[in-house]
Length: 352
Image: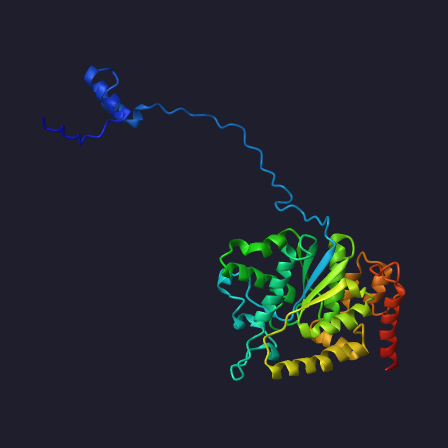
């Protein structure tokens, strides 16, 4: 027996079957009328009441909460990553590309000597700050502050702090993380803050502490500063005593550029002469030399009044350039040593 030949006819739809049935029975509803849209009567449906307008919630992203936050991580900014984050080409602007940074001459690469640009060091500082939010002893209980003002106003109004945050976003995009990655999430939830007034290392420390106070409602118990390793001595021996910050509650994570022996010697020597010594003579930075340097970086004394808002009187005095008798972050048990250190620094500077 020969095998049955498979049918090549597709099954009819219900609509086609109804047409065939109507044609076969000669019913009043002809096959052509089923295909004639004009035969279907049009019915006007009166419009219903207008829908009420949708009320959007006040906060799409919940406001930040700082319960359990007791520590501060400061990334001191030293340059400006200048691509505009609102420009469609921003995802193409790599933070590893030196041309995307406004660098000082001594921070730039030198093909003759093989010195690399310092943008990689700044990215290492940024990454160390981001890491502190999720790993290590401060994870889950710290705020990260990028600290640095708009120091290159002739080139861009962008602050160093904002540019470091933008560099973190650009780095995430370069790694294939859409939407800015963890940096964007931490920023949206208030765990990354931008301190945009500081023009030097002393202000990096003090202004970041005050920003923590404004946001969290109290002063941090611990502070970690992320900067160059060769600047650690400046923070530990000068800036912290000048504001009477307890020494055991301040640590520095130093990350230096890649340097040859000669470059390291020049860097350390330059820090001693131009970084450490001026602050040794002027702990609060109120003398002519350091004050003038602040002005060249865009500083205005009007900023002090803005920073005064909501602070204790003793902290206002410190901002005004005088050493008060007590400060709210001092240890209540034995503050005398810290007081003596700060007062000694100021008295030595005056005597000189």
